[in-house]
Amino acid sequence: MAGERLIGVLGLQGDYHAHGRMLEAAGAQVQVVKKTGQLPQVRGLVIPGGESTALIKLMDAGDWWEPLRAFAKAGNPILGTCAGMILLAGEVLNPPQKSLGLIDATVERNSYGRQVQSFEGVGTFGSGKQARPVPMIFIRAPRIRRLGPRAKALAFCQGDCVLARQGPVLVASFHPELTADLTVHRYFLGMGA
Ligand code: GLN
Image (cartoon, rainbow, N blue to C red; front, top):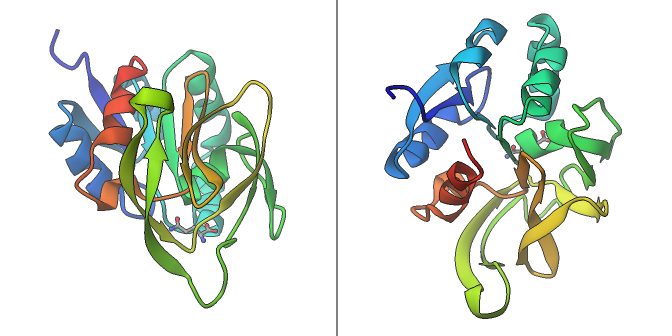
């Protein structure tokens, strides 16, 4: 059916076009979502990186909080990267700020140090024989400080969990849309989006 795999990319702020290109490369059709009324048209949503404080203001102005919680409760997959992860977390530190609370995780904003605001690394996705290297770009990135028992760690970099999932919610502290590696977007589409 046409539109069956239509995936939304939240287009309020941040690098949402790059996510759109990656999702298309992974075989999805993409729609930029700028109003809550568009949510019923998509079967999954990416909340991109950017600045979480700016996103919070825009989400307040557009009354996004309850529609996004309902969207996840209905089982629609949501991927949040960097600032998107901060918005999805259960608890935010440095400083504390409001969030959607859709994954039982505590995240610390700007946690990778002042002098190294951004870095590229190679992380490991999967475990055992399935484990493979994935290039990862961190930009003023949040760190996952705690993961609840219902959340699953899916990738690590330099000893930290950097990709985690709880039900339909997937979060990454890095920017998978800024490399050519489709691992995270393919995994997201495989979540039923
Ligand atoms: N430091 C930003 C914040 O706290 C996130 C940075 C990013 O999304 N690249 O919101």
